[in-house]
Length: 443
Length: 143
Image (cartoon, rainbow over all chains, first blue to last red; front, side, top):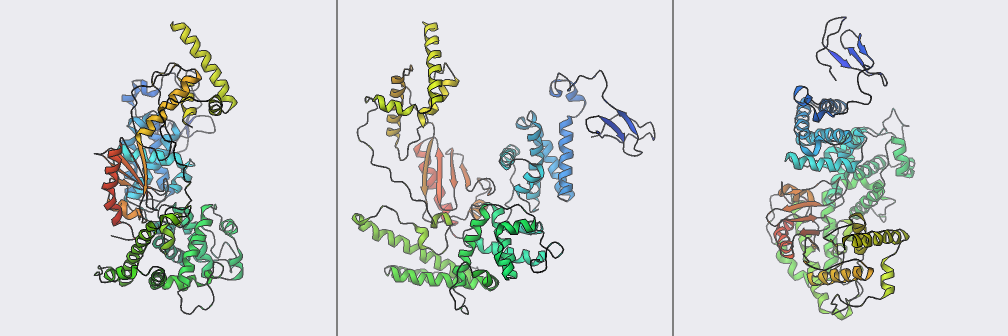
C-alpha cells in the first residue's frame, strides 16, 4: 500500500510503502530502504477510529483502503497464477465495478477477498484460460460454498456471462500438480507429464461420451482419469497394486473421496468396450481391464459402435416388436458428422424406441405389476447416467384417507407425538407464559 | 416437520400476525394442501395458541418430473445462454429461469426436472416450454 504525500528523507523519492513489521506499523522507502517512520502516533485512537471511513468526508478525499488492498490482492493472485496482463486488467475492472455495489461495499473483509478471487476467476473464463473454482478456493483458503455464493451474486449484479470451461482444458494443469516424474519417484512408478496428460484426456473424453461427466464435479473425474492413465501406461505389478489413497500420497495431492466411485464407473465403461476387442479371449473384468486401456482408447469410436450394435441385437432378441419400427430409423439420412457418430446416433435412437414399446406392453398387464411401477429406462440402454442405472427405489406412499375436512378431533396421543424434544417442551412453556402475559396485558 | 417450523417461528416473534406454514407433503394437490393447513391450524388451536385460519394463499408451487432420456447439460447451456446457467462445481443441475412465467427449472443430467413457480399453471407451462429444448440435447455432442 502506498502512503501518498510522503517523501523519503534519505533519497527524496515518494515511493514509500507500508511495510509492517509484526504488529508495528512502519513506512519504508522502496528505493533506498530507509525507514521513514515507525510506530503509531500516541494521538491515534487504539483499534482504529470510532467513525468508520464510509461515514466520514474522507470518502471524497482519498480512496478506500480496502479497495486498494483488494486491487493489490487481485494483482497478487494474477501473479501467482501467472496470468497475462489482459486478464489482470479485466479482473481489476470487474473488482472496481463490483466493489461499488451495495452487496459488496459494507461486508466482511473475507467476503471482499473472496470477491477479488471471483473477479480473477471470471476474467480467466472469459479469456479462455482454463481454471477451476477449486483452485481459487484453495488460493484464498476459503470455503468453496462461500466462494460459489459470492461468484453467483457477482455475475448476477454485474450482468456478465462466463463461457463454459471444458474439463479437457483443465486436466493439463491438473496433471502437472502430480509429483510423479522421474525426479520425484522411482523409475517403475514414474511417468512423463505430457504422456500422462494425453492418456488422461482420452479417458475424460470417453467418460464424457458415456454420461459420467455431466452433472458431476470435475475434480474427482480428473483424479480418476489420471490414476487410471498412470496405471495403464505401465501396468506392472507395483502400479496395479497401488490404491488411489497411496497414489495420491505418492504424488503429493489431496485425495477426493468421489474419485473412487468415478474409477469404478470408468472401469465399467472400459469393460463394456473391452469386451468388443476381437483379440481378447479372456473375460474382461474390472481387475484385468487396466491392461487393455491403451487399445481401448486407440479404437474407442469403433468399439463404441460395436458395443451399441451388440446391445441393440441383444435388445431386439428381447423385444421382437421393435424390429419392425427399427427399419425406418436406419433409413434416416445421416448428418454431416463422422460415420461412427451417425451409427451411434441411429443405434441410440433405435434403443430409445425399444423402451417405449416395452412400456406399452407393460401397461397392458397392470395386474402383474411388481413393487416397481415404472421400469427404469436406464437399465435398458448401454450408456446412461449412473444415477439412472442404479436408481433409488421410490417409497410408495399409502393411499390417502378420503374426505378429510380439517376439522376432525385430534386425539391427545397424536398431539403428544408432535412435541418431541425436551427443548421444544421448554420453549413451548416459555412461549405459553409470554402469550398469556401479553394476553393479560392487552385485555 | 411443518409444525416444528411454525413453533420455532412463534418463539422468535412473539406478536406475529401472519403465520407461514410450509406444507412438505408429497403428491398433494392444492385442495389437499389447504386441508393440511387447516388441520395444522386446528392442532395449534388445541395446543392453546390463538390461531385463526383465514386468507389461505399459495405462494410457491414445487413440481418434480422426469424425462425418459438423459440430458447433456453442457450442450443445453450452450444452446440456451444466457437464460440457462450451469456450474458443475457448485450444483449438479443446470438452472433455466423463464422470466415471463416467473418459473425456475432445474435440469439434472438424469433427465429429472424440478420446477418452481407461483402457481400450477406457470409450472405446467414451464415444462411445456422447456421440453423441446431438452429433447434436442439428449445425446452427447448434439450440436
